[in-house]
Image (tube, rainbow, N blue to C red):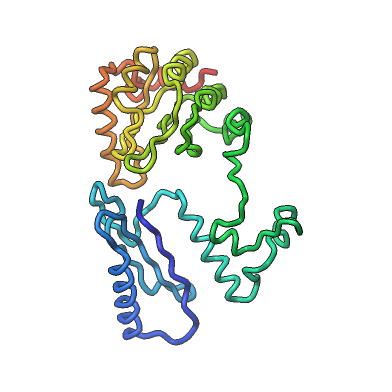
Length: 294
């Protein structure tokens, strides 16, 4: 995954062409020093007030596909928000509007206690000692969809997809089964949540998951993103044997990734899935009937 870098806005001093050239040269030098072979690159923006002084991409946004990082590259969110939030906190500290030694309880009552104080700096460097809520005992058994039934009813179609606990080694079959219990869910998207070279994804009794999906007419996604390929043709064959429906897509986040649908199609062919089992291939009436089924 590439890095999105936002450099703090500059002050209100006059700015000229020579400064522009010096700025670009300085950022080029920093980027050249930071880039390493086989690692993702970055997109950098520098602003002054409301004006963008420079915006430029360095290296690859996707190393595997050798997709270059550009000024306008759209990145997966993932953990980008963490250092953007950290940059905002440091800016507030620089302006004197907060202090890194402030007790977090001043801003979030109840989060810190006198016996166990947590400072803002602890949150910045991940030393607060606060446990991840997804690691709390019983979390998996209590977890539900992010949408209530009422909220889900406002959408034409709802996909359930794992986006947390993707590096855990314990069995998460119960979690996957519960996700499909919501009446509006029609597709179980990238069920494993795997990313090649990064995380293996969810561990589950997939035959049990597929059996439940078939019973509920929930389609199993074949995600064509080359880094995901989730499910791949080997799991798709097991889902087909269970009687599942399938939904094929590119998981594109930019127009250039729409071609990833061909990868999904390749896995479907390798698994021997007939068009009649693929919702993308249905006529509109049949598709709408399936979507509206509760």
